[in-house]
Image 1 (tube, rainbow, N blue to C red):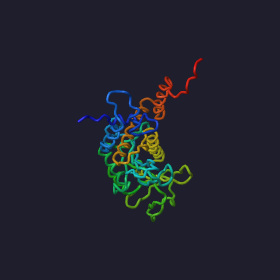
Image 2: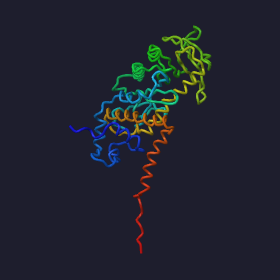
Image 3: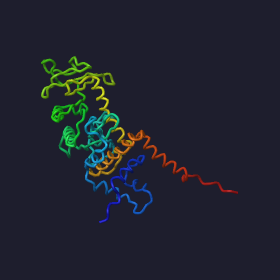
Image 4: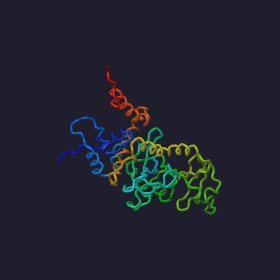
Length: 333
């Protein structure tokens, strides 16, 4: 049997180079002249033959992270698919970008960062009907897998969606510290008082230790959000101070930075295949593609945007040496 003409690295490099079109046809069109140039079917077969597996991502990221340092951040994002009608993984999800429920693919990612570098270490494409699980199940699976891989982070960070007892307990059970946003209507006890919504209690910016029913003692911080409303953070480290919380809260934005870089620079939203595993493979290869410009950024100081633009700039420069879109030359007398 003939070996495949296209390997995952071929597709990854195409995703990094192409300015917009992320199709198998376009991938075949831009291949350099060489023996056995792959046709578009070879790229399609790549997406169909691979088994979607985050282990390939971990194999690349493992030597780039310090598992005994940094923090782990878990969050999800919606990959927009507004016109998809028959794409298998597409369902309705809340989008923080559009501030409404939209059609798309929900991606849950675990990101490692030390403040200077950020690498996706694990992910899961979530499909409620097919998985028969809630979003909290992939959260716990990602945290458990991180522990099995030898991570001992300073903290596990997450948004208010994952601030539930079912998620707090596994993190504490691993001996780890967590910090996440808390909704103002969560009931806690202050000084053995009755269960009361956090927003109605005198929670301070320096942090107030309260009793969370079903869990135990936690420390809650009151901050002011960008829109002026009160915002609350919760941690199981009752000795945490405000300065430390601020530092960790800044690191929590790493996963947002990852999502904002993943979509425009690796084409994670642009694949048009309908078959579920093929779409998952595209997303997985897009995440692996992100690792390369992030490593390049840390090693050279060149931003993701500049690295992408340089590829396009070189293509423009090559075209300008021999432009082909011209007007007819006037006849000479």
